[in-house]
Image (cartoon, rainbow, N blue to C red; front, top):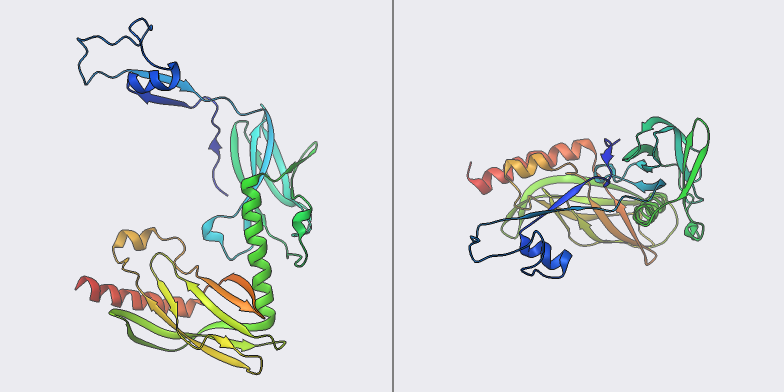
Length: 305
């Protein structure tokens, strides 16, 4: 859960320089304008300030949906409550009323003060895949001690929900078709002029006979990933190993490495019977340890330490 964030009511912006304030808010300056007179004696370093108060948010309750970047690839998400009601909301449960993620509200007791925006933790249920669930508008639900608040999920929340639902269903489709795993034998080599950790992505068929092809893989801020060939699991094949190259991405400074919150959230693009799917493919812990050891070695070579 992220901490409460104050709303925009009462925030003030300072617009520095009289010239900018006059041009934007007064339509220009003149010698007769009160508080904005410019004289020949003014020095170029003179500054004036004008306080601008943003319009208050319309009163009421609004609900949204979010998943933080470090939760990608998991069921962890949040229902966002924006409380502009003028009084605190004592929330007991939150949820989604939507066929794409069917399930009732989940217990999440929290007092949301008036004028605050709070992300209330929500665990995604098992998705219902197939068809177009967005023909039904997703509704956010917040249950208090005295009533149930129902609001349409706003546009920003819808963008999160569309992407996460599609990726969730893609992962389940891929998992029914093949077993995907990061595999060896791991060895140290080179990708062009760069040190590389060379392994493979192994696809082992579980069901059906549809061709499965890997098209692209995206690394993280500290790991650059690329695929070799072959990349296709043919209908008659039971398994294929796709060469995988891991390089440092030239992000060896300590600040970059310390600041990364999702070092192993890799994205993989594939096709199943020609239909595109996108999934989050996080390696197992033992592979993560191997990749970090490689990064130490590659960065030592790059920095000469």
